[in-house]
Length: 165
Ligand SMILES: [Fe+2]
Ligand SMILES: [Fe+2]
Image (cartoon, rainbow, N blue to C red; front, side, top):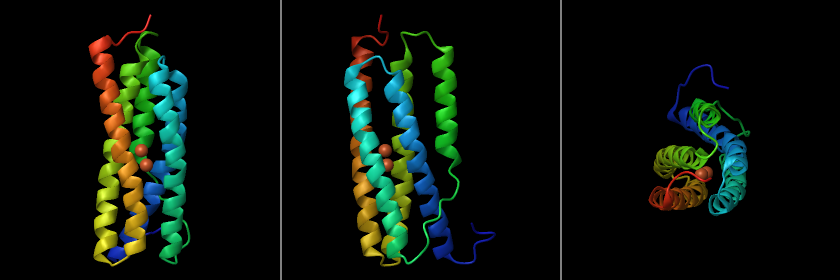
């Protein structure tokens, strides 16, 4: 853990570690959402993306190795806050309504991930860490796909009627 940052490389390492925490927390969050959803057509893509997220963790760990640095996770408060908010909202909401909240938190989380990866990739490319940029781009592509899936599901359930009896 850095006490202070003296180089852009140190900031990059910190942000890469924060992305690692983000992905580790998302494995737990996606698992919780899978358990809460009332619809099989939502549960399945969540499970698929949870498995992809395990690969995202492995890819980030590999990035540290490519940079000849120890794998170090920095805190990520954003996913923790999103997870806490969704848990509270689901608890307070009628039992027929979790799916709209599940797709909201999934959409918000993927948007955050995409922003994190776009920034990391720009930095990796600038320092000519091509292999690192490539691994992070693989994560970005799957997170963009997960966002598209969540958006499509949201549109479908809003049209069908959100509540499940
Ligand atoms: Fe991811
Ligand atoms: Fe994701």
